[in-house]
Length: 133
Image 1 (cartoon, rainbow, N blue to C red):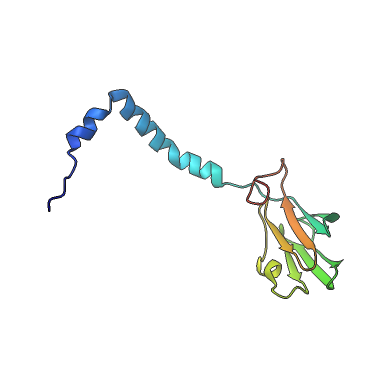
Image 2 (cartoon, rainbow, N blue to C red; image 1 turned 30 degrees about the horizontal axis):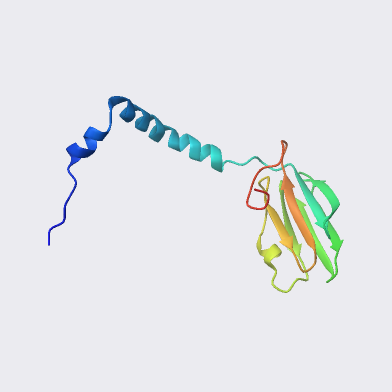
């Protein structure tokens, strides 16, 4: 049983000099494209939603602790030092609390059983993520 290994000269004959130049230019642009697509803007404000309606919008530079009433009880949102988080929530699994501190525009934490969510927004327009893409 023999395996056939393709000859390099066969592959080389399929490309013209311009093809190699285009391939090298594309490879050179990959790091720039990766950096651009993964960069996010800093958040400036946090929006707090209760039952799908805007409850409050706060500046991230101000230090605040706000209580939001929900069907299961109080959700506490903490804002300080350019970050925001859901500090406590009466939901059983605590996914929104486990999200921790959020600091980039487009990040969010959602407490579905208590119908409460926070979303960070930046200076510009909305960023695209898995929730609004």
